[in-house]
Amino acid sequence: MPETSIDQAAQRFNAANPIDFKRANRQCPICNHRHCFGPLPNNPTRWACFSSNHPPNIGIKGSACFTGDALDIAAHHAGRDRIEHLRALGYLDRASTGAPGKRFASRQRNPKSQTARAPLPRFLPPPPPGPPIPQHPD
Image (tube, rainbow, N blue to C red):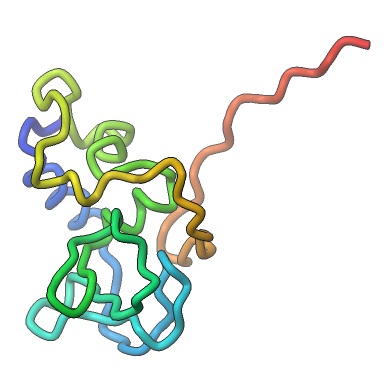
């Protein structure tokens, strides 16, 4: 059943799709920079990326790094922002939430972003195939 609270829906998504961020100095699955990605020291369920090339619209910008959770990574790989991803997967009811608020403005995807996407990590299933491409009549 979809949640009406964005925070509750995000918590449910992260609980259902955990990622082990315990290994430090890994490649960031968002910006592909090496040796800059790992868990937050005080919360190993969240990641931190220290790369200066990390896209500003994915995660939350801190004083020296970007931080995020499994939802940030999954939404990025699906080409959506956090709220769109929660709605698309049925974690969030579209009618009850309206437009994203200011709190999530920094997490919105920039359609003009040229950030290369890293391959999906092994712990996330690939997205379902899209509709077939129509053939051009000769």
